[in-house]
Length: 186
Image 1 (tube, rainbow, N blue to C red):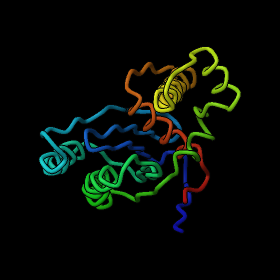
Image 2 (image 1 turned 180 degrees about the vertical axis):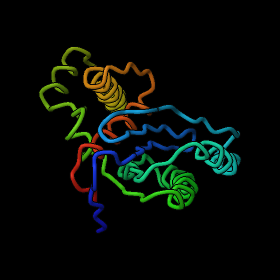
Image 3 (image 1 turned 30 degrees about the vertical axis):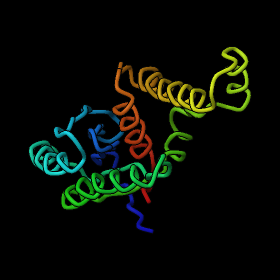
């Protein structure tokens, strides 16, 4: 395990939330958010988007200087095919960014537990199911995901006064905030 000591609070940290469709980012300068956004990739499928990912990152990174880049650890995927496609896109992103700064991986549950706490409790899930009876398990799962994502968006607004509509940017924001407020980064 690599540990990066945070030498001073002016470290520039970028958290990213990437997929096969886009890369959301948030840059903190010390403990303050500086910039955030989302880069959408073009192409009809992942294979067509892979070259665009590299091109977009090359253009984006010309004006970006950071010390540490935090990425979400992929822990849940719906299928083996999805996992492979995510790994391809993540490989392009990480191989490019690792040339620019120290890359650290953070589990979703770790940054969530220290920031927005978006996971719904068993009691909340039960109450939701009672209020919306007769739905499929996949419908409930999707609704719980939507509610969790909204909690992160709300946390960013409540904590930093920043209104976001993209849950991808909100995730990158919360990941960056988590890393920016650590004394050491593993």
